[in-house]
Amino acid sequence: GENVEQHPSTLSVQEGDSAVIKCTYSDSASNYFPWYKQELGKRPQLIIDIRSNVGEKKDQRIAVTLNKTAKHFSLHITETQPEDSAVYFCAASIGDSGYSTLTFGKGTMLLVSP
Amino acid sequence: ETGVTQTPRHLVMGMTNKKSLKCEQHLGHNAMYWYKQSAKKPLELMFVYSLEERVENNSVPSRFSPECPNSSHLFLHLHTLQPEDSALYLCASSQGDTDTQYFGPGTRLTVL
Image (tube, rainbow over all chains, first blue to last red; front, side, top):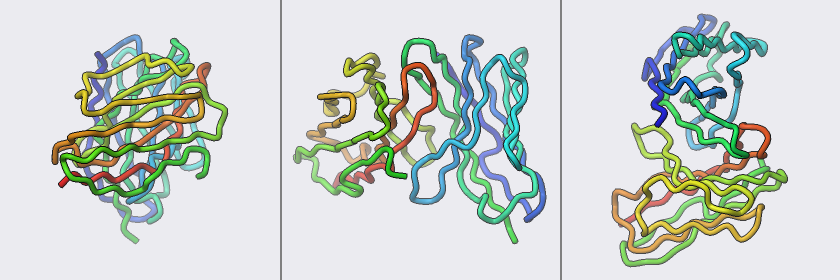
């Protein structure tokens, strides 16, 4: 089955700096890669996703890049703010059966210091 | 925030109790999922229902029993749990022709 590795497990940055979180996946058939943000005591919330027919996607301060050949994808957050502090999860899925089976990474705790 | 709801939000139970977790989605989705979230572990998929049929069961112990009476509701029946089953149990839903899953707030379960 699919295996997703995520690094780093913790990341501390100063407000205004950029943050990069990286994930690798094992199954070349995976075609959908979402990123979720989970604040303490709250539900995981989708912040951005990318499909395998696209190499990069951007939404304001957040961007995701995908390298299908190397089987890795990354989350980039620019101009970080304290409210970006949370745990971020990457996931990979083969979603062509009428439902999706997401395999998650272990998560990255991002701490943005003022 | 109200698209997927879960009750109860917190549950403490003994190993001999029987309890049920409830999930309801108000998004018109046709697939629903149960996940287990433990400290320092990835989110673990437990069960998947698509069009009210169970399509995946990821080697979950039989002390966890899911039920999907209709496309809007999902239950997880619990009996004779172990302390290591203490975790956050998350429900999610998605629409069949897309892959995006939307999560509920979770039930924090403690097994004594």
